Image (tube, rainbow, N blue to C red):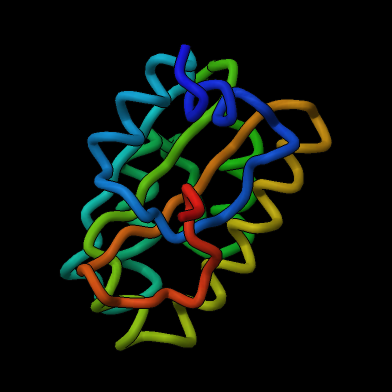
Length: 146
């Protein structure tokens, strides 16, 4: 197993990061580590409801998903319908949403940080990666670090 795959398998290291490599690379490493992987293209997302819809589809949320931040938190801290030893989620093409809809982007990041922490306390890794156009800075720590 590679060093990156080993790190992904550790709950203590997980968090919300700006992905500094290509999504296919992190997908390969997540699968090597035996983690569930989901990828969402949010390049055309303009508001919170669209973002929540992408999560619902990619993570196969139950029909009762409430389509708000609290419901996102509830579903992503449950995932009983998607059992795995850990989770890696990549939001691709995030520049438009992250830069153009900053208020919703920042709210989403706060919810995602809370979700990561909830999983960490259970000893299970949950990674959230934000990926965007080269040169775009999401304001999040870069991973893997240079």
